[in-house]
Length: 384
Image (spheres, rainbow, N blue to C red):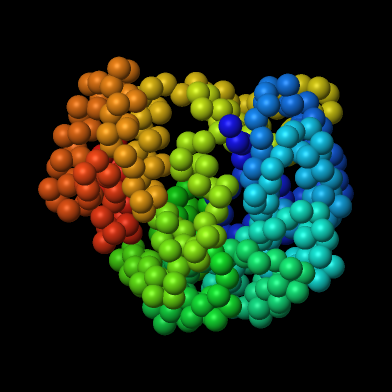
């Protein structure tokens, strides 16, 4: 069996207004102790992982590119020393303004072969309102540095629905992305919830953080659907609700999540899954380092996955993939455990199918392409 490994680096230069992640702005002198703690957690985890082989590694955050390249290299070296590895993909999330030719070359030498750039927009007004540090020209400069260093697998994130975004500015952002033509892109619609400053302000009807300038839900859906059409026409394969890739370049690591394959997470707030249990580390990076230094457990949540939980995940995660899921396989695997639940789900599937929200081709079940923009609503109808 192969494993994915996720390394969480919860540090940022600033907190974006829309961010609902457990990340923070801390003094740079906390970076090195944190990296040392991650290495120690990896070393101490070996006995629980058996003889599985690691084939993907993903450094996410936060902004992992803030760490010194030598610290990132040491974490990778610790993984190679402690585990059997056959690395097919090693990803580093990076913000454009943190990239230099020296850093890019050091990352490549360390073994990173894929960079995920937090671009979000190619319009400076939108970036500034969102609290981003980089500007449009930084994206082009960073891409040049990465290409010169030998990176042939670059992903970019774009957000549909940022404050001040218009149809024209969104189309221009997509055009600039296509001008660069990276191997991968993730397009997310802005989340408005209590977890971010912007979300709380918008829900309260306020105007701080340009909350009053957030596009409507219909506009966001329109932006997303336009991106679907333009990216498809440019040769990108739409393989997951929010993700497109040129042929041969889907995110191997993220596919593990949607396919419910096992992965290990290291660092503050990192999650793990072994097929039967999910667990997570404490989110506070200071507490995490203290626990590691004192030899205490860093686990904050341990949740056995019941057959019903697993069935729920099969649909919620599997249907995010455009290829869909094998309904016959799911019914066969879960018939003995949750027969009554399967009967209810089959009735809901028939109803959603009759309304054209999902497609059923033989035993292959998938979301109807024209309803991807409201996928969450479909999931609620199916799984609530």
